Length: 359
Length: 254
Image (tube, rainbow over all chains, first blue to last red; front, side):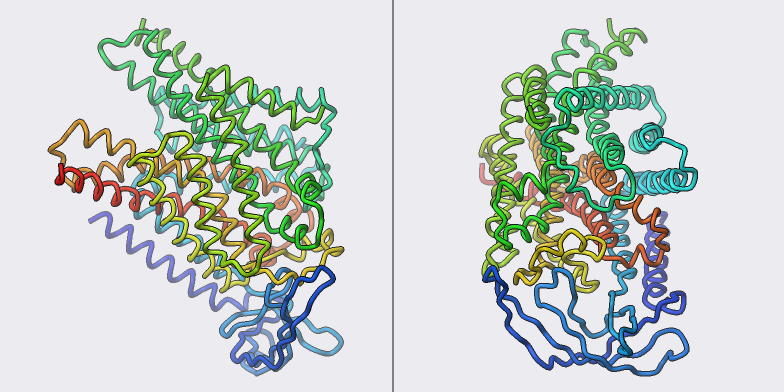
């Protein structure tokens, strides 16, 4: 019964939001056109100086204004873009595009993508609810709260200008850990132990990484590869390091705490047995969690690296220009993961002995 | 010494100290994963190879390293591998569809400053490359969920021979739910950490919400986060169904 209520609320909200983003042109100041007809007038083969072959397509477009004074009226223009679409886009029917006037001619400068983001979001929410049930809902809530916290912190940072980004990242880390772990396993001693362990492991590994940075003068880290810099690059990078490895460290802390609390309930539990079991669990999860982090960090640079390779840039230069910071992130996160194992083992056992659950 | 080399040495020392031989193996796997990245690059630069095939190949390489090298080749790792492959291909299709609808491929105007020296007309299909990249960033997590479920269900089936399909399926989903929250967190925080610079940039340049959500860079990252979360949820029923089917089939034959 309750499931049906949640499912129908989800469907109603999802379809209303999609319908809204599909028809919200009037809320935008920039002129928007809905593409109605696309005719390919010409397709030209181009070979660049590196012998890469691409196609430049000329499209004749008929569209309808969606907002402003000309709403409902038709507009025609010519649109030229490449088939590969690295930096431009071909138009398709039913696409909504933002228009700009250049030298008296209207042209499409950007695709309206809000409905795609909303669609992706509801796909995610739907699957999490369908498969995850109540737990799925709790992870969604914690995800939402964390996004709001992140947004609030960035807002505060940009507005006030006298808070240090690192201090803010540390505060954020504490909030993230509390929100995420409480939503995963509720308010219980196990959760408290996992929270403290995650934070200790995060800050110890941050200390280790900063020591390494100081010792090596950060040689080999090509900060010039960082994009979107409006702030001191080093601070942004280190703040990112703190937040980036939190999830993985929490994963280790929670798995260790759950296993040890579970085993401590058994009648023949001894400190030595728990220690052995904890070490074994730690060994088992170490490899998989470091792999998760590796792929999450390293994959994002693939499109840029492809561009380098296609422009005949040597592979070693391509790697050092595009991967050094991602690799540093993956290494720092992995150091955090591995450190979290003995730290959580030690702290959980100390808690259990002090509470006299085991002797 | 380079910071990266020293970090690698520290990681190796820690892994060996904490994990003994398994730690050494995890360290080797960490660097073998680079191989997967190079395979991906090597095949993607050839516009004649279909990208969906490259994605499948990527799953094979990552599976060999992280499933078969770490856990050995047997029934369980094979099921985990098949579930990962199926999930990866489904998610690939979903992202391709989204990317085509919103033309979320390639590089945003915010990224163009440093790319002006390059030729951009390189003849690659950036829509599908974008999908392959998202699949790759999630592949570690998908595989982790798959192997955890298969291992747990095999244990259950071993201890309780009379367990029914329905019960086994319910246990699979329950085990999956327990990992769902932590694994999505692992990925999300990794992405958040990476997107920090971008979010600050949007704020500093006072983008409006409308400008932000419609920009290529931001929408691409949102699609990445949401599809990654979806992939982790999707692999749970897929692995459970495959495992229940195999376990019960081998029961009947024996």
